[in-house]
Image (cartoon, rainbow, N blue to C red; front, side, top):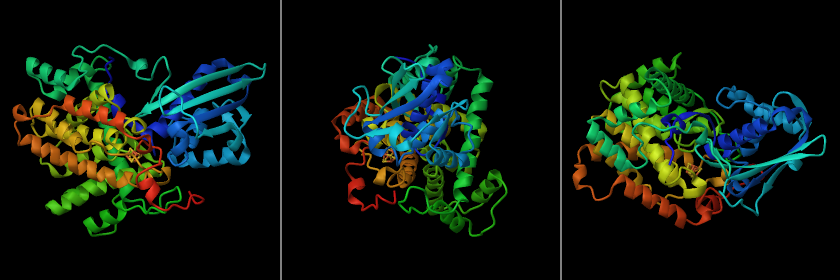
Length: 472
Ligand code: SF4
């Protein structure tokens, strides 16, 4: 089993889906890399989308991601306002600027094939790229988007690119507990030691604070962007209204930090704090649904949970400073790696327990670490948070990452805070369920779950809510 950097679990992303947007975008980049010097010999490209990518791909922006990826755009850097115009231009002009070097004809209805009938054997999120070259040869490659923006082939995956041996490898939660006890370390201290196998300590701090900066900017954008989300479901953004009601005035502060100062000045009643947590999560996921820049943690559908808990901590926990922010991110990321290694963070494999459940567990652990929990309490908090997401299905209405996804992030954040409070007041030596037990249970539940509840929009809310598909 490979070690995974926490910065693979918590990273800068683009909405609306890590598995259906970022993964396919990454796959396009990988295919371009395979083509290398043959790029200018390409006559045309066909892309086949299978399984869940075909069934919910349009709602999740898979088509947009594939096309933008083929142009050579980088989703971590692109001006997100340009994404839809570039996509629309390709569709209108029927031409694609391959890797920014060479125009090829690209007819959306002809070259992008949604195969609703078949799945590739390795994973439900499969896709095949075929490039026809001018000499008649062709290059064909299949990729699998395995959750959280990770992409695999049958022989390797994007984690391999960063595979490394850490000094204290933790592939199970029990190992975290054992190392921390032996070395007398907090969880975040242990993560620091391991993470230094990839990067120096000041880089770790800098990268974590960069994530924090993006979180602040994302929430700030979300609470001040009104309107209806794209996709045709007519879902209204609610974070701006909540923000206005909680602040009680209508002047937009000039910076995210100035807005945070206003939030901090609110009465810290239970009701207000509860509403703020919901507002933070809604803000992020409304940005996510609108193809905005977000922090993938561990996925995009669940990208509001960790930011909501972190912003709650920053605003309402006395003395919560940047050192705590870093420790929160390190601890949360480490818990995410344990889920990825022993279960899944892909809704197409495990339903929503693999997205919101994992993000809630990560956030509960991060919060507990910062509130002074010992390592076993940190693991206990993650266990409690996941235990109460077991079996949660993925049933996005119209294949869009909006209903139930956006509200679900508020729920995941509140559960994380509750789980942390229970763990901090609890004695882990009396706990009957370990984090490893609950991860094993989650994985077995994932395998038993009917495929209609695994990001296919063929069950649950997705089939109860009348949708004007023509509009979507
Ligand atoms: S229901 Fe959950 S897992 Fe499915 S798309 Fe929405 S947030 Fe992601």
